[in-house]
Structure formats: structure tokens, C-alpha cells
Length: 80
Image (cartoon, rainbow, N blue to C red; front, side, top):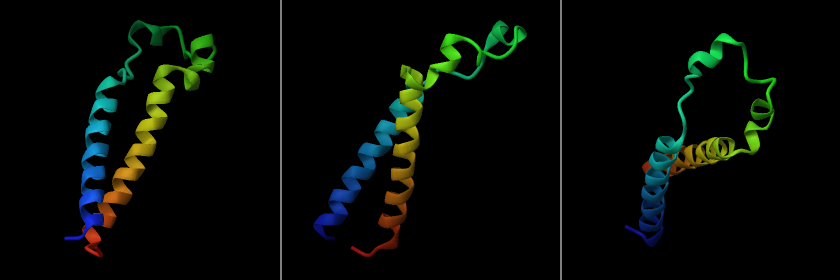
């Protein structure tokens, strides 16, 4: 096994743990009784959700999941 194999393996484990923590930190999609009044897109919270904590968590989760997939493919190719 080469050094790159160990480095990518450790990076893969770190990404796995980070993804687990990020998914658990996100809120559920249930709106509860707020769904009766209509969408939340028209409120201040709905328009600025991308800049909130939840929006940032979602973006980081997407980036880490792409890294997870790419790194998983590279590790399984066995080119190192």
C-alpha cells in the first residue's frame, strides 16, 4: 500500500464522520401546522434561508457528499 492510499483512506473516514454529523445537525422538513397557511417562501425566513445556518449546512452536506462519492470511486479503482 502506498502513502496516497493511507492519505485517501484517512480523508475518506473524516468525510464520513463529517457527513454523519452534518446530517444529524440538520432540521427535519416537517412544517407542522405552518403548512396550513401556505408556503413559507413569502416570508423573510423563506427568502433568506440560503444564508442561514440551515442553508450553509445543506451546501456543505452536498459538497461533502460529492467528495465522498468521488473518493469512494478512486479508492475502489485500486490504482495506488
